[in-house]
Length: 335
Picture 1: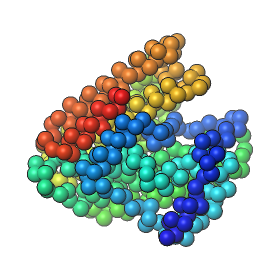
Picture 2: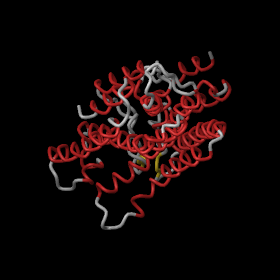
Picture 3: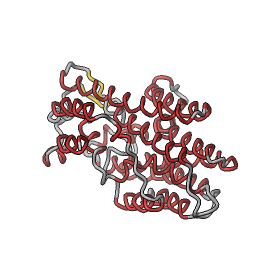
Picture 4: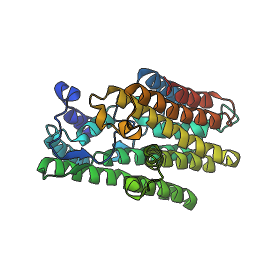
């Protein structure tokens, strides 16, 4: 009841759902928009919805494990942010909206990979695999919240409060995931997830350490791999380790990496198409001097290559409904 009550309190009015106040001068996002920050096209949402049915409509209840007093305290501070345009308000509202199928994508894909490795359709996945899917979703959610931190060049008390909340909320959920990971008592899996979290943090510095021989597309690929690909790659590998599907470990790892890169490439492409000021978009930097049509065409090739690579890896799994659901999600990314 406390969670429902606070969900209602956190709802933004209709005007704010459509339009957020612009950031003040000298303010910029510390990270580009992630895959959950855009309204994805209906074919993908339909594919994800169908995949959930194949998986038995799994639910991830980690937000409900947060105490009512913690939710209430957070809601009080978030209410102060409603009129500031801080990204954290939109992130929290989205996470509290169960109708948003695509926000469960990380955990769902890990769940489906676990199912796809089973030779017998009636064979259920292990409880540890289900918990691993939830852990993956928790870490992804913490990354989403952390991605709402804004770089401030000028002091702004409200936005600074938003940054502090984004940092604390993200850390809180990530710490919960660490407790669940420890309960699995598997040092190898803990190490793999530790690598994913480390690479997410290190992705902020790709621009600083890259040298002149790396193109802007190389930088985008490396940063996206560290920010999104590493978590899903290591998660798919880990769930197959738990299921003792040793012959599929590499296929699962590469599938997770490629589907994450394809998904994020699709989000980046869709955001470019919708951008009113394309000069400031990341793809303009990736393809300098190219026309809008050329940028779209060239980046579609990048996205489609990752989709094809993901499908190639998926084909190594036994033929079943879970494998088909994964392939359908990959294919619609080309739409």
